[in-house]
Image (cartoon, rainbow over all chains, first blue to last red; front, side, top):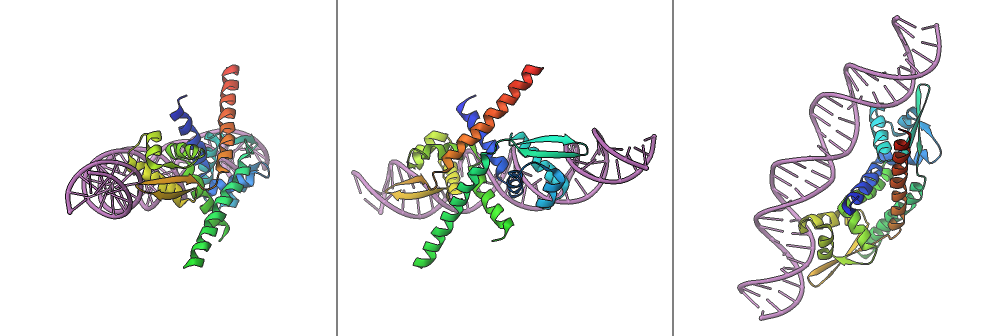
Length: 106
Length: 106
DNA sequence: ATGATAGTTGGCAATGTTACCAAACAGGCA
DNA sequence: TGCCTGTTTGGTAACATTGCCAACTATCAT
């Protein structure tokens, strides 16, 4: 795999996380596996939309699926993702600090 | 900020990282600040393209810019992002393990 | 001033993403 | 068997992202 291909692959994985609904689902899956129906209630979109979001996460290697009777349960494949969200929050906080500092100097 | 808005904001930050060229630049910036010209050489696109990628990163709050003479130097604002890349690599590795396991059982 | 260098911005065509609906599919049950 | 429920897939219209070119701005040197 060339360096370019590695970055492309990493970008694909990160891009899979870059959607509000998918982020919400990943957060929920941190608690443990959930069926599509539960995730649908959580995000509030059409079930077909939720299913497509989940297939994006599956293709990226972020979640696993397990069929049990009528339901399909999804689970996080690589839990370290969750740690990262703290860092994203740090980015958010730093932005609001900057905004606050700006408004203080106006 | 509602829960939806928070997820939208987080998604925006993560999405900003979800492009091969931007990922490559973030990785390079982990070593320290770099001018646009260096980053351009690194990714090999038109300078206008690189500049637009950098503005995506700046808007997301991921990098800072500093002008010095003719050059503009960019730097990472929140270095914890780098830790996360190890986790993305874990996702990649686990995928190739799964592929290896699959090809072994065929 | 003139010109050269480093970056940014606007425009635009090509491409990718998203969300809904409708249709298909699979497992469990009458 | 046929129906119900949970999920996936196909189609498509609206929207967002990308990358190049050309035009512009800003700083420095002659």
